[in-house]
Length: 455
Image (tube, rainbow, N blue to C red; front, side, top):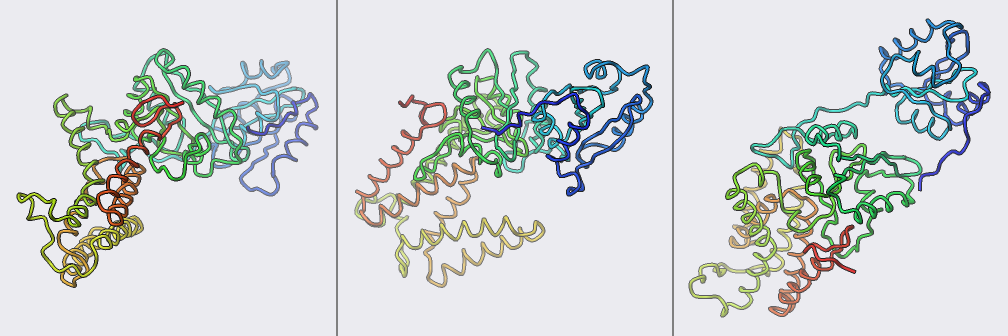
């Protein structure tokens, strides 16, 4: 629950200004501007954040206000907004909680002597990057725009695609310190009313200091996940066309200010492995892409554990597949080879993330040659193990969900360890555990990954 200031604006101009000066660190913070001026023969004070308000806009507003005379001054703040403020987004505020929140959000507020209210002029402009296509979730034939860190721009990208009066975007906030803006988007005539009510109630009842990690902080506060179940509870997308399509399917989209992605509810395992390209091609092609991605996703989990299982039980291996058996000398047990390569692949990925872009390609080639060629020649790894782990590393990029990729990786590691320790019994137990993780992975909608209602 967000802590609010209960004090209302009084008719005393000096009392209002004194309260604002005590709440806002005007003298300590260089970017909080207090501008004194005279409007229609009355004292007035502007409060705004430098960097959120453009100088040209403030200059035009002040020029218009200073030109007012005592005869042209309206009697109250509402009439002043209607007759004297040459701007589009103007509001009259009656309590200091709204005033402080608007100032710190970037709007300019004006106190005028004799008015028992504050005039809020929303002329803020947030620093924002261009709406380029996301690097992670690209489409070959789809639109080339993507969400940015400014909430208003993101909602506009979806409103541009859905010109329907049933599209509702409710604004709320969370965090007693950060007071982060949150937009709950849904189609009024298609959304699941029970799910929507549950989402709103959870957000309103949040007791959290701040959303320092934006959507991740909100996701953890909304739904306390079990630490041992790594499968994600939400689907994320940086594509406005994907978010708009989910809205039209009756889902709820949650957007957080300062975050370039949207949270989608409810979700299932099939939703997780979808991507935009599945819908930008003919039906047959789209189905083929989905099936291919599903099969590859399954292969990333079971390929190396099955290989290890057959290597431990060579008599199970059919004659036609005898060529996959390891022929070279095994200096290091296969399970340790697989685990070391799992860690090495993650190390290369982390190194690539922190490597300057001009060096990432040559360094990746060098690392691939060193690990692929010389590690086999030195006797650390067998060529078959390197081949299967290379397939797993590349296949992880066939689905765009980063969290799901690591969840599948943890399932693969669990299968490897159980198979190495308990042979086929461990492999069977690992498969049962994976199925249980999927079945009992309860999401915010009350359903699991298989879209079955859980109590």
